[in-house]
Image 1 (cartoon, helix red, strand yellow):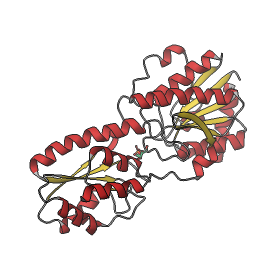
Image 2 (image 1 turned 60 degrees about the vertical axis):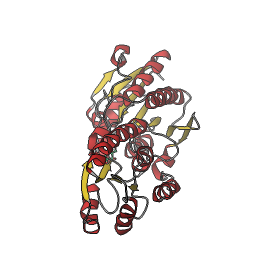
Image 3 (image 1 turned 135 degrees about the vertical axis):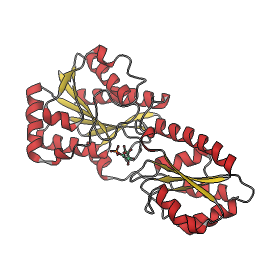
Length: 323
Ligand code: F6P
């Protein structure tokens, strides 16, 4: 193998650059040229390729975002567009592909591997942590730290004014960020898509907890079935007439910023592992981490099986909080 393609796809995540760096340096070590593909599958279809040099990846381990750019490329679902991508891959002499992204990105990689017969390896990169088969995805730890730091600040003002805050965090389909940031920030309650939200029960919980307490923080995953933080506040307001309620939507600040130690280390180890897998002749595998060991799982499992947060933790949290 002399040339491998590399792209980042879907929502960016802190640590993607650290993975790009590790892949480029590892490949060079083995005498392989890395072809950086701009803006995910979009760049693959349009042939926007760069031959990566050592200097391209200098000084990027600490930077958030992705130097290659990313996109959610719906056009890749079109077979004709994929044909164009295939022609570009052949013309560039790309013999293997590494895709850093989430399950949508891996779906694209899977189709490509099937149609074009090119080896593909996936590296989980999403702040949502919603990929089956790995304990952590690149960007998740940094996003959690960003949320916890923000909630700590909200707590200061909430306690000063005796207010109840509904803080919306990302997680369109999954509650990993909400659940674990709630635990780490000492939130009073958490609403996630994986459990049924009972507005009245939350209102009663707040009322009973609030005796003598100066603030309450309720973390709301954006994908909760009752809606985001604004919807929840609107629905709960009639039950909490005597309280001052506020909402904060953390939004895309959760996706930016310098990656944490954990994400840099995970991304570096994942990048090295991905190149090694391609060299070993593997295809359609995802790199993951379990008990601090790098592991591989079938890409199809990562795509088709669901990753769910350990909801029993939420029950434990609820018990702790109602004391
Ligand atoms: O990257 C995943 C994610 O962060 C989801 O949690 C969120 O719903 C989505 O991205 C937002 O995506 P966009 O930036 O395309 O609006």
